[in-house]
Length: 151
Image: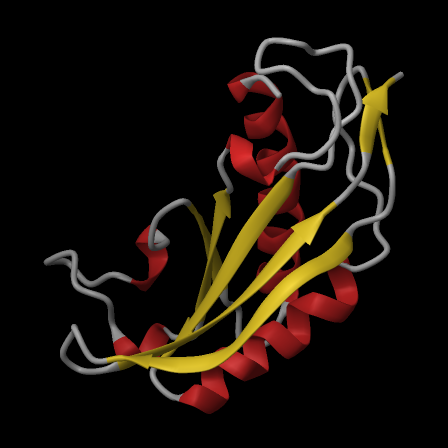
């Protein structure tokens, strides 16, 4: 799969996750491969009061199945995006995942020149604590994928 097509798929997942987060009350935020700027303070440090949040990442070419060559836009693919849910507590991270997952599963992403099947859960991790930062953060991961074929 081409890097361009992988990015197109991830952009569609990001847009869906972002829309779900922004519709929550209170509003939550999603970042595209980075911590969303809305949850950082003026010094660039994450503000615990603005948690939880989600970060959406495209996974590398090893996560694609089928015959899709790296530069072949005319092949089928199963691109995968990872969504990491981060909170100041385990409950916050799990809560945000519980809000996003049922709303994204089964949806059909819009990607130009592609027909995309429904979003499916590919893998998940239980929540865990990141002790490398102070204060500690909690996170959990869902990986979503959707079959994609040229239209």
